[in-house]
Length: 384
Image 1 (spheres, rainbow, N blue to C red):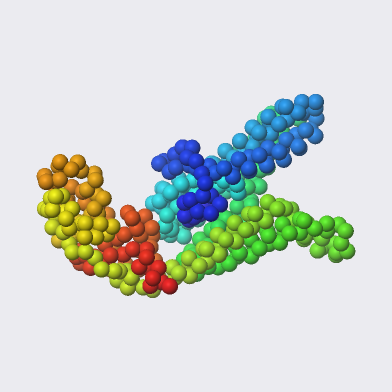
Image 2: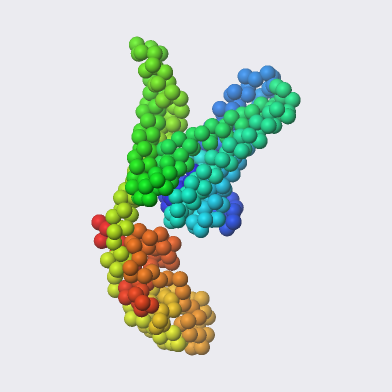
């Protein structure tokens, strides 16, 4: 699942780092153990009924555990596809997380074009389908009715099901994001497309929640028309699991809808409408002994350096230089140079830069001169 969730938020908050992919940390949450246990239990009970495991429950449960690990590997490959495609299109990726509901790739900012989004989102289900095809070919190559053939067949089915489920247009599932990309491509209105896709996602999420409620009811004892019973049976197929997914999707799609509304409104404004006051510009040749006296006046604020502007500096930057070297070190040696945003930049674009800016601050410039400071709190105050 490609997404823009904030790291450490909500259901994926607790997690451990298990590695990196192209510099992107890979996390697993404790809830992934619950998912693994549920899959192992479900598969193990099924395997115990199979002739291949007759009178050998230990092998049945061990095979169930191995099958679960291989399936989670497919989920991981799905998310790696999203991450690599994002990085190749200059979309920063914060992390890949595996948790109770599968996986999510947390990115910062938006793809520049609808076509980029189609590639980024579409590659995940494509990898799942390719994985399913590989296991499907193994089924044909392995001995009939053997344990390896059974495992390969199940993995082919599960990866195919994962791809199909992700293609359902329920934002922020991959299908919902593909719907948004297609609408964006057709209309040229990114945020309107997001609102429509998020609305469809809310309908899908509510459908899953209703299905979970129906799974608790004995429909066979009710006098219902056959068509209604079939529809209710389909809705309740995922059971309480579908309800949990539905609640997650509902929250995410509502957040996406509200964020799109805000960005649509901010797109009609400029950075100059939100900026606050900026400290006096520091000369680039001042040494750190002199600098510390000035920075202590506003230690948590980013100070501009140089005319024309070279960058910004904060009091904590001085910690990178030994105290004995302060008198011989100029501010230009510790300045952070990528901290500018033009005063006429549309505010929705500036939000993406602000989300990855150091300490959430940017110096606002006009014709190379600092004229203000942009922070999330200033945006929140004006936006609301």
